[in-house]
Image (cartoon, rainbow, N blue to C red; front, side, top):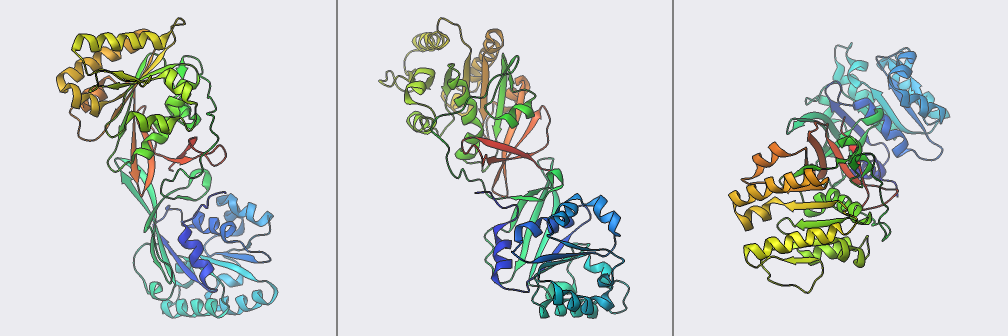
Length: 451
């Protein structure tokens, strides 16, 4: 099912009763008009028209500034009234609305902006009350757009209030929609992350894998001298993917869940193994080898996993599981077992391998100084052999700065308004929201830019 572009609370608000009035607040450039236009197709009902009054703009300006209006008009989903039409005059609004309702049934009526329609009056609040009263008399769902985010007399007349905001998070610009008041509706989440990418409004629900796709992972082919991450959007973000012979780091922010960061890690590893390449792993803290195997074998066969995955166990001297490297032995024997495992994964064709390391586990089991030394040796070996190195950093590690310095690429996964987001520090990129791919289904994911 196609997800909605607006918070579900707003659907409930407008479905709750006829004649609901919603006030949209926000500073200039926060996307108020774009949001109002997005509500039209979202809330469209059969045999109903939608009216939009642009109080400050003439018709040509409307079409030039808001291409979505042209699309809605072609579909006969909207009637456009510009600043020169009588209904844009507060003194004539009531009579004009009466006349319109004699010939059309309106599902939604929008005034953009309500400030402009009443500003020339000595007592604007009196006019506001008159306009809102007339709208409620006709039981028309309406949206009133205000040019500022401060409290006003209008707050007490309307049934719902939302505010569009611009902010920053870790130096990245973000947009939020705040559900301040929705009379009769329980607000489960007060703020949603939003984007205006492509001139369209979209809000993002909390991260949810949703429906899981077919058992078999569909391989993403490598391009040129790069390994594909298995996520086409991430390949584009990084250039063409991960460069062969590179060491790459992903930092996990506070409050990011295991499922959220696995939404990026899982496709990288799945794609690598599905191409017949080995993975040698030191799992991040909290990830158990058996659980890791159970998760991945939802999308590839157990035979493939057991053949191409090797997971280090620093505490066990032996193991019956083919995918475990038991390293709970003396140092020399552990080094020997690790080297033999790498050679087995390369096989006679000398295939590249993916060295996947959770640095929190490495730091805990080996100590900071030894971990740094092993890390530098691993990075050097990766570059010489054209393998792929991938490291995971979690909060509070002493190794962090040293890892940042030697990384070829460095991206970070964070949580904003319960959404899983990603951005690049090397290379520097904008912020993206990670969502399940609705067409290809999870674990395939898409990255949507926050603009």
